[in-house]
Length: 170
Image 1 (cartoon, rainbow, N blue to C red):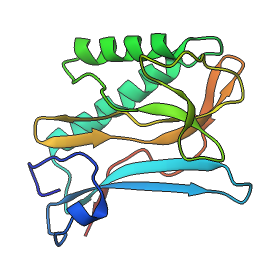
Image 2: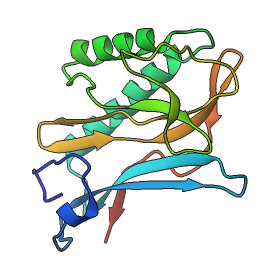
Image 3: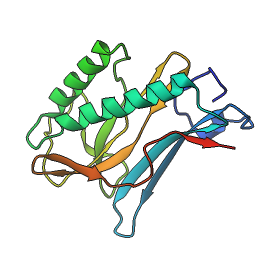
């Protein structure tokens, strides 16, 4: 994305431009491991230095993800998680989630449960859940993406060890 021109994720054939100084890159790695189970890892990179606005919104994305994770306790209906998350976003002046921001993964990249208003399933122990709050506010696309295994009291530690930071390149 050019500086101050945030865009949502798109297919590669719509991204036909040369990366330039000041650009932000939303990097998403989706892959299955030796056992065939999928995970995702996503961070933002900047060619140059990250703006204060991008840093502030990334800090909020981490806060939003932490709030969302706090809701993922075994037995909690996915519809309740979705409603509480959107309430949190509204109360903090951020746009409501309209896309799939949190979901199960396994032998498929996207598996149930889906954290949205029409999912009848509830969170269960041993689920592999990816959380990736993503939104545009002001001049930036803000997001972060990691996987968690649901334990008896909720999510454990992140499965990935990549730093929770914006990577500044160059």
